[in-house]
Amino acid sequence: MSRATDCLMDTGYLQETSTAHTARTIPGRWVSGLVRIIDLWQERHRQRRELLDLAEDPDLLRDVGLSRYDVLQEGGKPFWRE
Image (cartoon, rainbow, N blue to C red; front, top):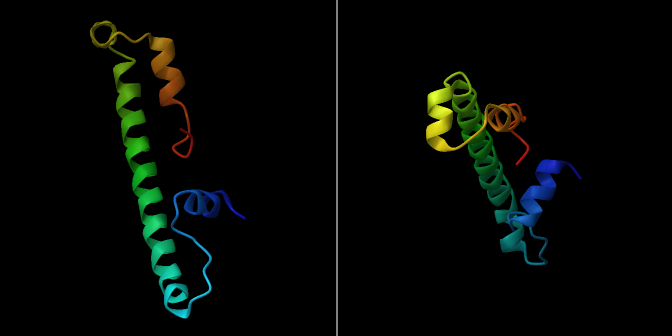
């Protein structure tokens, strides 16, 4: 299975059942779960870009209590990683 499918299974969006009615709703749940994952990834990407902008201002870093190293580490992560 793909990582996205595993994530959907973990969140309960893909569940195997034996009834025909529920079987018809699985594609809708799968799409809904995929949309949620994409929204999450977009939000992480936006937040990490903003963090990287902070790295250039030592006064802001001091205000929020973060080191430049920590900001660069977190901001450099790919969007699909927590």
